[in-house]
Image (cartoon, rainbow, N blue to C red; front, top):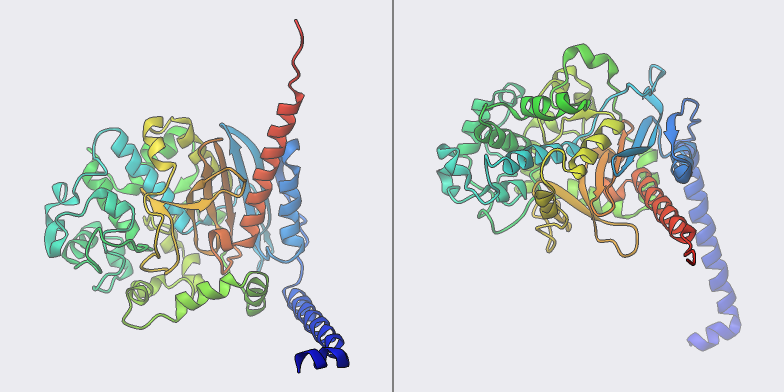
Length: 450
């Protein structure tokens, strides 16, 4: 029957149907692109090394094609040298305020990499060890079967403290003694050390407790970072922004329905992420993570994160405030060995956990020592180390070639990390330019006979 169908012209009908489907799909995509519109990048500022001009081209294209609807910035360091520093678009599109070199923004979970850095400094100075039990520094923490939880388990999301039973108010979140009490009495969500599940919010309060108990001066994580890193090296990164600096903040916005559809059409993996985020059972740990604190439900009301009160809060899981240039500079300093020893850096080159699904996000999530990892885009490379943030802001390092890429944006995207198209294309352009420059350097070396 199938053969007869082809003989009677079925093949031609099939070709026509396929063409019709493809054309229809292209029309849908074109319509979505039209809905999203294009943004003219009229205020691009900064500079780019001549060998990295493709990065500027991609940065402009992200705006022109409508992927950047607000503002953004990218900075790249190579072996301590700033080679890309670009910013443009709007800090607040609703008021027409442009994004400048002074604009700061919330980088959400990219902040976790700074928390990891603070703990690493304390480890390097001998004040604490990853193998130590938290209860040795904090006896009350041993309640509810948590006596064997190590610093390592806490930093690699294996402690089972992703969700809290006690509702957390804004006032609670700012009270470190209250949070110490809540964390100490919390029963683990799973047997500690047996699973890894992303501690999206609690990571910040946990790291603050680690720093306060390991630091000889008993400083908060925000104060420790300010005095030991930011002030010493001129890094404009805040874990708790002074109210006097609020005027420099960009305004965050969520994607419209049209922009969401555009992301899904161009990368269907985004739909999977949305499904995992919104379709979990009410009794699941992941749902509990989303529901508490109620005021931290950023995927539902991003305006909460435009609130100056939150900008001033010390929360090293999600509320770091910075510029791309300073974020990249910070981790370039780390790779140089100025913040802690290169011997310790070696421990961070590969993930501790790189198998199975994460208990919370239900996808593979390579992680370790407070960092997340993504595959290097260049053949022959293994990992980039750092942390992506909600909406797209990301910090990533190539530890072998000492390249640091920092991307920040206030026009939040649905995807995160690898699923953030704007970041992914910029990141790929950086490493393509690097490989090309390296190849040109190699070819320019000619043996001269003696």
